[in-house]
Length: 303
Image 1 (cartoon, helix red, strand yellow):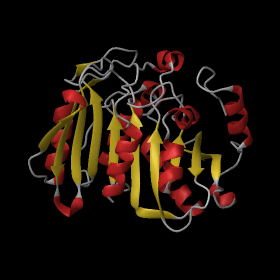
Image 2 (cartoon, helix red, strand yellow; image 1 turned 60 degrees about the vertical axis):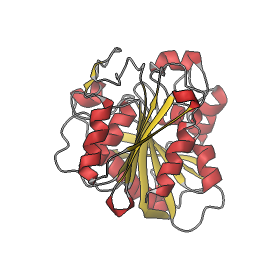
Image 3 (tube, one colour; image 1 turned 120 degrees about the vertical axis):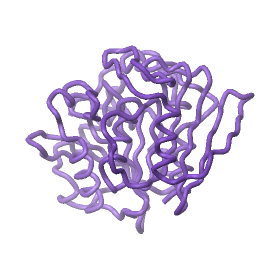
Image 4 (tube, helix red, strand yellow; image 1 turned 180 degrees about the vertical axis):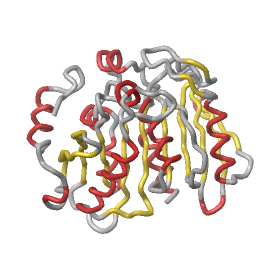
């Protein structure tokens, strides 16, 4: 297993290595409490993923797939975004897959080697969900995907290409590639208006990927149409800095957009770590919103 040197401490690297990156997966036994890592071959590639199972978890439990951004990793995401702590507090499993060469093939030319080699990341993540279900008590009605940047775009790709997920929660992301006949599902999207990597208003972003996508409100409006939602209601908080558009939809679904005025390309509420952020192409996190708390609360309300 390769650790991102600037993102993980030596102790974290030792923990990740000792938790069995060489283990073939849940078929070798039930997923244990705590953090564990697995690998398997798919599409001619050796792929890895990491699982956090809270101690004492019993019965069918929700499952959250967290997808790291470009240049990140599953181990870095587990350290950085607070999902293990959220899972321990609320009783669900979290899985952190590793993108091939630290990126995801989302369609629309994004991103990196996975896109140029047409790596089938939809098949990989679908297989990961099946393997986790084989090793832990997963509630199949409560399987969710979230992620940041390239990982958030991948969450939309999963929404467009599978029927596995009850809801997705992209942050600092957009939707790329075709989405011709998606199944209805709930969506929560968080985005800053000053994001230069994936501009809120659409168009080509800065950074090595030069992601060129539609405006975020256009993406969210598309999912309101897919879900057959009512007109959205508007609310604001934090002195008007945070704006929330919420649409209720049939069968208990919802589509929500949280806009943070002046925020850049970041995961709100994550720790401010300038060195890591520079490597990952992230801006200073907005401190007055905890994206992990907010997205989990949305997921919990929308099986």
